[in-house]
Image (cartoon, rainbow, N blue to C red; front, top):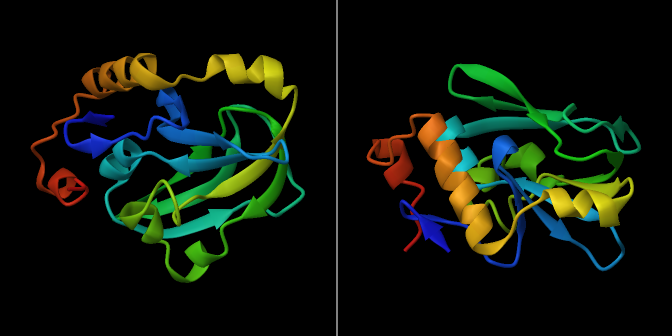
Length: 154
């Protein structure tokens, strides 16, 4: 799936209000990362500082801090759970989030609370794309900006 030239893989779940994707893992954990739209909003990411492994993360609360251009922002989790893993490669190469947000640029992995019930809050396929498009509209997102063009995959 694509929207304004930005990719959104069909195989993932999405939390459009957080600009995050989620992937269910075989062990019951959930991997989170920034969507291509989130990358377009932040621009070039210079650092990602996650919470420590073992930390309790509440829904709507920070799982780390993303530093970009002249600001920093808390990356807020769309679900509650225990922080199981962080992408250590981001310590040396935080721009992996921009370069490969859906694979090597993943951010954290959580053991979610009550996943079967919580999972229902996240979107896939066309409903996800529609919700992301609405989020873009509400954010007054301009896909013609130069930094967005750099994020468009071919």
